[in-house]
Length: 280
Image 1 (tube, one colour):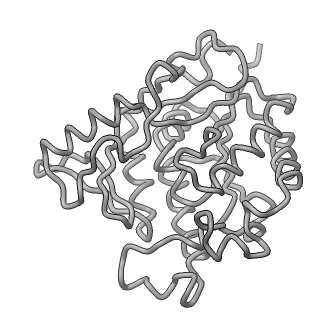
Image 2 (cartoon, rainbow, N blue to C red; image 1 turned 90 degrees about the vertical axis):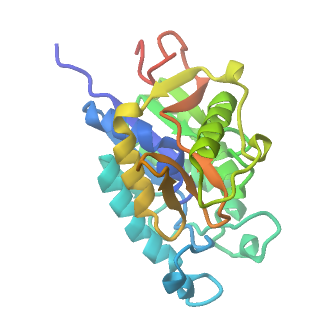
């Protein structure tokens, strides 16, 4: 009997989200021979910029950040082993909406302001073509409340459970215990960034986590994916060279745990405790 090829599809809002939240999962399953598909919903045009030399790319200046971030995402996909990458509706169809209440939310192509029905149909078309068994996106709060993350959740939950091939849908989350332990390690080693109190970073109670995915062997690939997004973040570590955390443009240290955490939102949980495909 011919072996069934495992197929994983991830739906993310902006370039860099794939590496920050699921870079380890992408790298692990790609290394194990699965086909890994990434759908990115916007170009991240409203992102803030870390390197001063690239400041003029910003949306309130040359407004060229989206195109630049597309190149960063291509590099991250190569580092992580993504099989195929698609932009929802085609590159440039939907624009980064920015945070709620900002002028960017009123742009005519703003992702969060667009037709959720149209966007879900665009995703459904990709699901029908690529036929993944497992789909990953954010929880209903979008991880931290960004309107584009919430919309990515909404359209994924509208399209994925109805797709013929899809057996499971997961929400990627941050383990409360892992965040606390990671911050403690960062405090022990020190950081050039501000080390926040644990409650400042999002975390899901561990009793709600259904799947803990060991990514320790694939952390170098995740670090490479993170470093590809130079406009958005800086990867840092300890004096002995160990990578322990990263920071976005707010200069707040965020730990990088050796596992990624998920909540099963659709499908059979049997066998999924440590493997998104377990038991399928």
